[in-house]
Amino acid sequence: MKTICTIVLTVGTLASLWAQEITVKGKIKQAVTGKGVVAKIMYKSYPTGGISGTFTDSTFSFSIFGSSKYVINVEAEGHTTNAVLIDPKEQMNHEIIRDIELTSTGLAIRLNHLIFDAGRAGIKPASFKELDELVALMKINSKMEIQLEGHTDNLGNANANMKLSQDRVEAVKKYLTGKGIKKERIKTLAFGGTKPVSTENTEAARALNRRVEMRVLKQ
Image (cartoon, rainbow, N blue to C red; front, side):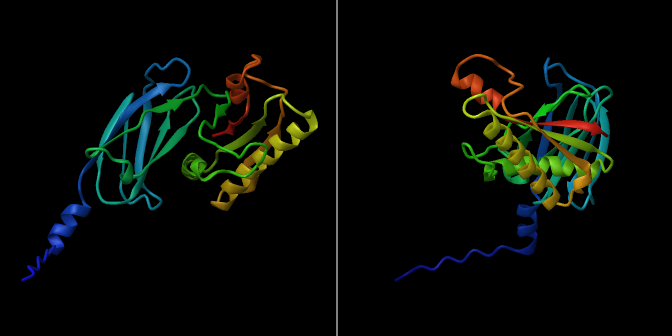
């Protein structure tokens, strides 16, 4: 004889599972020194903004419920505004820990998780989260204008490297405009291999030199 087990989830049970509380917390840090920065911190559900909160501190902690994403926007005097996206799917043991780094005003910010195929300008899917955070940042700060700056290592033909760096920043610009950011707010510059951050003749140094950076022109 077979035993049939039926599990019945009531509406209240489903709502309870859906609305589990998740604590989001982290620190606001200076990108170079790692020191804490007192900043204005605003969080809101994204993209609707129906739930929001604002406070000023060098740390943050708040609760979210349900499946909606949230954006945290951080502003501090002398620093470029930054924003990150929080997805409830990232939670571990009902917590999401996310420190946010701020860069001094005027300095270029490296897009650390922007990945391309070798020698190509196609953006790999692993890059989308960081670019979506940039989209959220520019949507919240509607007057912000940026400059994307492309760099390669110095191996190979200099003209080909210059074209590759230009193609890559144009690919990033296309992604951002495809998400609703006006093209007039995004300038691009290509440097090829002319501005290395390291002159060491090692693969690690060359990897550092292959990058796209963002510079905030207006915020």
